[in-house]
Length: 130
Image (cartoon, rainbow, N blue to C red):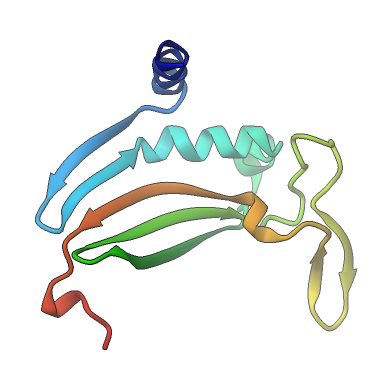
């Protein structure tokens, strides 16, 4: 199992490298953002479209206290482009246009949201919301 995990880790490093960084906020894990973005565009068949016109991607942030004294903040890229193709089924993610709401996605958007950066940190007084 450990050998398979190591091989998977090495394969992923070849496709989209990531690194561990010690920052003032704590331990961070960060992907090469350019290669990560290009990989997602290609995976959802948006790479050729992006060469000619803008493609919509959204950024989301999520954070919580994991246990007493440790919290996380995760930045993700969400595929929201209306012309994106589901890489598993080959079917467009956007199935129709609605005059009121715009594009209607047949799949929940969380299924197409990919972590790009994660910070593990000890909460400080300034980082607390309440």
